[in-house]
Amino acid sequence: MDVALDPMRPDLRLAGSPLPVVGRARIYVCGITPYAVTHLGHAATYLWTDLAVRLWRSTGVQVELARNITDVDDAMFTEARRLGMPYDQVASMQRFAFDRTMVALGIRPPDHEPTARASVSRVIELAVALLRSGDAYERNGSVYARAAQAAESAGIDRAEAVRLAAEYNDEPHDPERDDPLDVAVWRAATPGGDFPSWPSPWGAGRPGWHAECAAMVLSTFGSSVDLHAGGADLRFPHHAVEALLAERATGVRPFARAWLHSGTVRVGGVKMSKSLGNLAYVDDLLTRHEPAALRLLCLARPWGLDWDFDEAAFEAAEADLERLYTAAARPGSSRDGLAAAEIDAALLDDLDTVRAREVALEAGGGAARRFISVLGLV
Image (cartoon, rainbow, N blue to C red; front, side):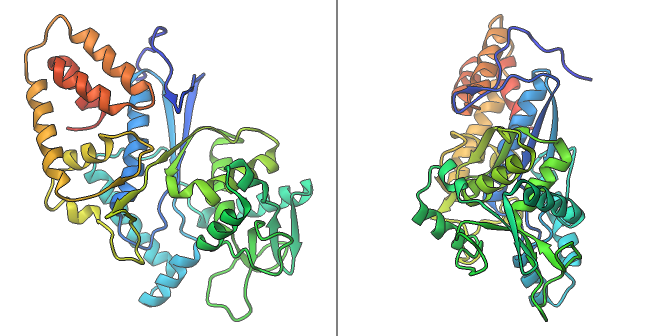
């Protein structure tokens, strides 16, 4: 049952902009590519999204959350080939492991979980729409979208945009493209290639990564969302291009009313990366630490802040958690309601967990219990 919405309660604000909601709040978060075990960087993104969902719902807002699965991806195909297994079998195994990890962390399941594999026809529809609008062109079985403007929208100069495009395997030096920053919406199959392919009006091929997310959002929620979440490393090219493709196809702007780009988790100042072997795997951490401590470790900071992980930090998180539990066990007082309202106000103001935690520890009682509940520290 929906909670009655308090007309005096402020709207959720992110990065200084209020997000009033009429009806439902539509949230989309970029999900995993299911070929590797979930690491702390993934978890941080889904924990911040979970907090936004919990907070909105606790204030009476109806929320629909979609979290996709990118199970059509060249990196996943390559890993499946290395393992000598069908790619869809690898995806199924990793999805099972991922779901189990999310349950262990207390992250509530999404209302929608679209998959790239089930959305291939939607990507083809997106490509057709972009061709009809003149925002894409077909060449030798591939469909490319004119996407140079995405870098400008993201505030990134052209040289840096080309570098990032290459880093994220957008192949900016592909000679078939009119511009290095154009992106493949549909990629023609390579003759004799090892990757799976699907039929299309332009011949056999597979979807492009950015087009997959754009198509999954559009087919799940329509032309726009209220909040789009994902890691800060996805800001460009992925999110900027995804938004451009959707806006060009539908003519509706903005594609996302707000973005929640959670800060990058680093080790010794270096971003976690499978290639560098510096990943902190969630399942491994949970053999030594309580899920609530891991939640607090990730959430006890500004959401957009990059941060360095050190397992020694769990000691402080576990001590803070014990302090919160002790504060919550104190008898309630006449100030409970006011303090709980202060906590809500802090969380609604850019998910300010730092200020909300300070209020919870000082007030104790019902206010501390409110903080614990909304952050899922139980």
